[in-house]
Image 1: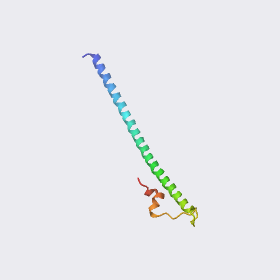
Image 2: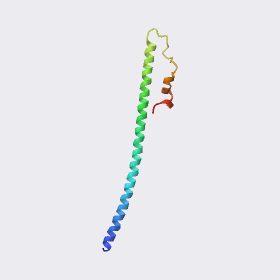
Image 3: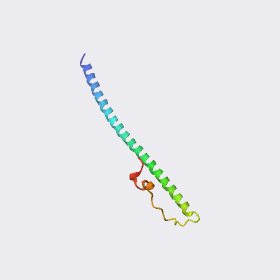
Image 4: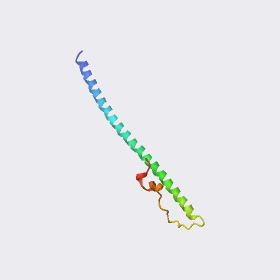
Length: 98
């Protein structure tokens, strides 16, 4: 084995070290992207919960308006009934489902 093969071996080792460094950097970027995607998934879930909450509130408001508009109703439309124990979670985020 002459000096040529030793030089080739050194170059191969340097190339391997550089490739490993690039692989590590790529893996780090991948891990960061995974965390971002998980963050977006969590946001999407929160948006779903909020949309469901909005639909419920809108439907309750519509029901309330129908009751108030019905003949013989002596409730004024801007008057709302007090919040029941079962509905408290609609107002207080502490009670919102995960």
